[in-house]
Each structure stands twice: as C-alpha cells, then as structure tokens.
Image (cartoon, rainbow, N blue to C red):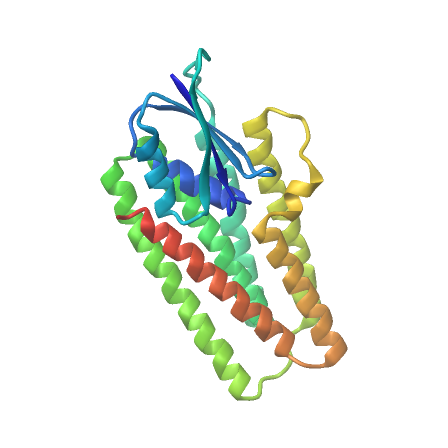
Length: 263
C-alpha cells in the first residue's frame, strides 16, 4: 500500500472534489481518497501507479502538484459508507434551488439569479454523475458526462447572449429585493451542502467557517447579493448584468471540466 499526497490549488469546493472522485474512479487499486478542502490537499491510499494518478489529475487542470509518495502500513477497511444518501441530499437541494432561482430570476428580470441557477444546476450534474459512478459503468458515466457538459454550455451561451442584448438595449430594472432574498436562501443552502459533505468526510461535529468562504458557490451568492444592493443604489441594471456574465463564464468553465470526464 502507498500513501500519496497531492496539492491541488484549484480544489476549493465539493464540485472539484466530486470531479476528482469521478476521474480517479477509472483507475484500479485506489483504496481511499481523503480531501482537505481548506488546505487543498488530496491524500490517496492505493496500490496503483503514481504516475497514472498524476496524469489523470493533470487532465482536470486543477493545478496539481505531487507532495509525497511513500509506502505505508495503514490498513484501509472497506466500509459501506452512505455516499449515495448524502449525494442524493445535496443533489436535491441544488436542483431545487436551480428551479427556484431560475423562476424568480426570469420573473424579476435578474440575469444574476438566472446565472446562479445554472451554477446550481452544474453542481446537480456533478453530484448526479457521482451517483452514477457509484453503481454504474464507466461507459455510462462518460456518456452522461458528455451530455451534461454540452447542455450546460448551451444554457450558459444563451444566457451570455441575453446579457449582451440587455447591454445593448434598454430593459427595466431587475427587482433588487428578489435578488437579495433568494440569494440569501441560496447562500444558506450552499452552506448546508458544504457542511454535510465536509462533516461526512472528516467525521467532525462542526466545520471551519473559513472553508465556507473559500467555496465558489458561496462567493457567487454574495456577488448576486452585492449586485442587488448596487442595482437599488445606482438605479441601474448594469451590476446585475456584470455578475451574470461572470457567473455564466464560471458555468462554462465547469462544463468543460465535466466534458473532460467523457474522454
């Protein structure tokens, strides 16, 4: 058995964690993965080739670097962890807020909420793919990853086109109060998801507050809230459009990471 430690600089939320799990699920001999999101450290216990693992991580372009790899006498017990139940929980929370944010975003004419809803949908795709990876075949996982990635890119491009149209034209101001209230609830939902995932991995009763604020999803929620405040203060829809275009860009970036899993 070997213990190998990687530093993964761009691993700062559960989405990246699940992408790594899915990518490494194709490699035989990996017994356990331990994630430290705060320190951005991945520790693996395995009998497989270190270079094969490193090459797989490199394909995700998360800025990985090998810290150490050594023999260990650690005994890994095959536990029947309730991964599926946990993944279903966070998937349902994310998909529910996708529906809530998409509908309220369209009603309130907020591109920030619409973009954030797609970010929630992206997370739902990742958790769904993780569920498939638990009991499904590699071929099935890769096929669905491809469909999910292209669908996500299509929605984000439509959103970017709409943002550009609104920049060029004149639209009534988005409803700032809806932006703020819905984003606050989304912020709470993301915090709950992050708490559940981290509690499950670390077996601790609580979670460090600093880890919450390193999550991209929570930063996005705060960005939409800030945009809502600026919309009201400046009497302009520009802040909403700016946060919208930023989040749509992040959604496309995440989609390309999902597509890498289909190769």
